[in-house]
Amino acid sequence: MSTALTGRLAPSPTGAQHVGNARTYLVAWLAARAGGGTVRVRIEDIDSPRVKPGAAEQALDDLRWLGLHWDGEVVTQTTRLPLYEAALETLKQAERVYPCTCTRSDIASAASAPHAGEEVTYPGTCAHRSAMDAVVLQRDGKPFAWRFRVADSPAFTDLFAGEQHIDLKHAGGDFVVWKSAGTPAYQLAVVVDDAAMGVTEVVRGDDLIPSTPRQLLLYRALGLAPPAFAHVPLVVGADGRRLAKRHGDTRLAALRSAGVKPDALLGLLGWSCGWLDRPEPVRARDLIARFRLETIPKRPFVLSAELLRAIGYAG
Ligand SMILES: [Zn+2]
Image 1: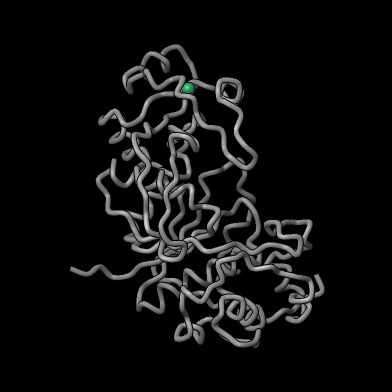
Image 2: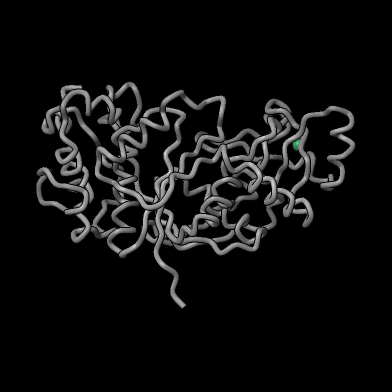
């Protein structure tokens, strides 16, 4: 039995989309189109305190400008709360989650100090609770999050990055699937959405590799079939650090208003992925036949001011 290939682009309107996002979207879009598949778009706006007004529309404009056309309706996470609630209910019924009353500082003081760049591992302070204990906490007006019990760490074969095995017990531990603010956490929402949207292939930045074993645990606990994953390197500045404000204004909206042509940017990105010999202007759809996941360099793409100037952007 074969399932139709479905990819997705999932901009988060917590900020503007920049050149780094564009490169990942291009890879994701081409991976689906080159396989004759469809492309869905989802706005990941559940992190409401950080959502910037107008950023969702702007992200869709950016995708249109790049020529990364999608299929079907745009899915918006904030309209889907009942679906996430149903998934949480399933996890409660199966005792896969427990209510956690720890504050950030509780966890920081109870956990052993993480090494540089590592996240704090939840020490399991509330793991003795059952899902039923939420009733009493609620009655007493105690705020709590829901944490997923990590019993194992599923290994997976990344289509780009190869074999991955992260020991979740020592890299984060039991993780939050529902925030004390009453909203789903990223991991739960993404799993529910990708499954509901029929996504079969997730292409995203390799900063999300640590999320994948957690999401695989959720797929399994919810009885859903997981997609394939491809995590590609990010775009960094000349200093080797992740693209940020200090590298100048690399927002797609800024390039657009400076008169940069999308074909020029796509040529630069296509060249950076090994599909073009030179960064010459190209349309997204003309890259479909040239797309190869394996030609993308394993190292991050260094976006220098020179490269931006070469496509007509002074920054
Ligand atoms: Zn706790």
